[in-house]
Amino acid sequence: MSPHVSQVHRSPVHGFSKTTVEVIRLIEGIGVEGDAHCGVTVQHRSRVKANPSTPNMRQVHLIHEELFDDLRAVGHDVHPGDLGENITTHGLDLLGLPVGTRLLIGEAIVVVTGLRNPCRQINDFQAGLLKQVLRTQDDGQVVQLAGVMGIVARSGAVTAGDRIKVELPAEPHHPLTAI
Image (cartoon, rainbow, N blue to C red; front, side, top):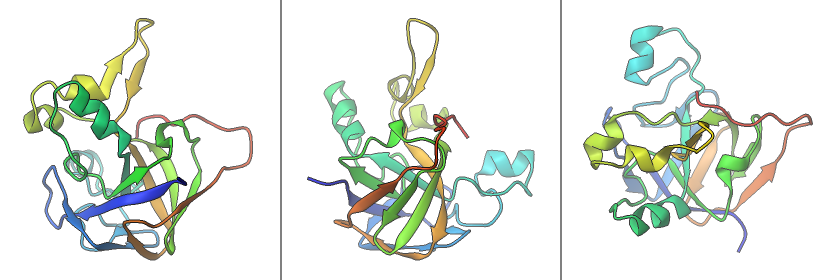
């Protein structure tokens, strides 16, 4: 099956998890309408504290649904929306995409800006979960599995079942890093 949206989520308050809804509306240059992280400048509380005028490169959070299967396999009861993503995808290697990848989703376009940098709040949600989404390999390299962030390049509605078309940027491709 081709890559598609399995669920969409939003929350008007700065909490950890987001509520699953039928449709979200992405607004170009701003984010998910009605979501606490929507805005031209950074909306994540820790980042606002550091510099409130920083451009919002984290307007949309996407997680691959397959992550939840992996987490359940090691004993964590985690479901779409629980980790605060706006779009849960299926059949797409989000973490393997290069910076600048355009995702055509429903009517909207999201440009991938980087990896979600998971924080300690994940352990507040479920003890031990952070080490499952932020792992250190034997060679010391840190692997971040908590999804990707993006900006909205074209407004539009996104619903469960929408296909996702991937447009890679021009080479050379640059791997995603935490933002």
